[in-house]
Image (cartoon, rainbow, N blue to C red; front, top):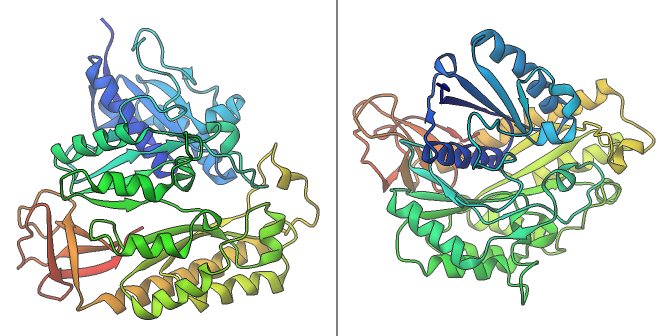
Length: 415
């Protein structure tokens, strides 16, 4: 008799997290038994990432760690890493597909299509994920994702709304709209509807779950769109952009579209008038040809807004991309030093944003069942995490309260 207990290990982005939860749900429906303890599983499914060399190395090393943790388990490696460089995952028992003896009705490559389920909510959690699109049509010089996830494909509006309804019915107080490049939603559909059109359609669905946007491409959004989002009570005042650099010259070498010319001034104006709005960005340090002056431009640009937090990535050459063949590689030492400076700046930005919000009233969602325990946590609409004080008994679901010592023993920027 086949042991059908399955545990999961996920590396990488929110879309990978979505893929894992969707696969967990489908395997459960097919008669498997998902378990949390990796040591108790007959099968371990590893969802890999290939966005950077470090992520790929971690995925390769994870197979050995899982083998030592549970020698009797059979390991299945799936995801972007296995599609990008399958030769590095020979230590897995099954590579790139689910074995017939485990299941034959579940697609082997989670995340490569828009197959159901479109919305997932992890067991015991209050936040759900709704994948509105997958794939990307951009050709950024450093990125392998379009070749791994294919061109942009948008989920039909009616399917998005049905998934939102299901997530709300299952108790989700927040729904994260995710995808490879969500700002491309609708570009492949008749009439080329926009992301704002989809959001308006979703907001017409009865319910109270707040909506959080995942990463936005700066050249695909306008100040008008962001201003409209901020007028919608159910859309979280939190925008994460993939700016990558503050240097126009580096941006051009990256083969990325230039941000809307009014976006920078709008964000500075927004920061002055709405200090509660959370603004984050991905930043790549040490892209080929990046000079010290161009790196300084990035630092100054980040401070000029200022942003609320950064996701920092030292440049990692990906074989098969245009950037891998560019001259003037930044040596490893200065590349890592620049990444360290960005991370230090990130710590400053997060601390400043947190302090600005102390004492302000925020909409909070409880992240765990509210039992009055000191470990209970919450998340504000503007992306601040808090640990509730022992004297405060958090209510399950969503509520509004000031971020004071009587509420929170600790407030900090969500990672």
